[in-house]
Length: 252
Ligand code: PGA
Image (cartoon, rainbow, N blue to C red; front, top):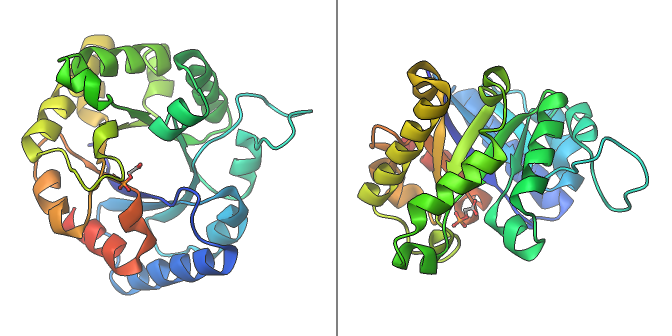
């Protein structure tokens, strides 16, 4: 059975005290309203990760990072390794977010290396894929997503692939207020699941969690999550509010 997950991607927001207050509030809420057969992951900036991982104790609520180095350790000024992330108690890392791909020029090969390093350190990977607007307008969106998955995670052996969660995030929907329609999300998620089935077989495909991301909020989450191939969401802006985030989790 695949897991239902809502992951918050705080991006570069929240000073330490604000982030701790947000995580504390979310944790408190899910202690009083325990999660059943679903999971909430708070992907915080590195600065917050140690303290947030330690304070989260509501069942099913865990912490994650937004990026990691492809290197094990050493002279890489400013970088954070997968082992360091794991040492905070965090269990998950986002790899291949479109902002990393475009602003920091992270290409398919680098993302495959980061994914491998994260998995070597027992982190689960939320691997992001998605097309930009012009690619969709040119009807290239399926080809783009296929390439990103083939180069990034379909290089993994099955048991490693099973530790990956896929997030489909159409870039034109991220932070824009323009959400993919439920039909557009389902169409791409179904396509992704078929790709996984083609590579690893139907059982693995059935067990793969595929999240939708891009202007997902409490008011539209339920209709997106109602699709058979949408197993939850990766939430940016709306994850910065305790109420919004908890309502999105409740919509799942
Ligand atoms: P958004 O971001 O929810 O603010 O659109 C989603 C993401 O980038 O993960």
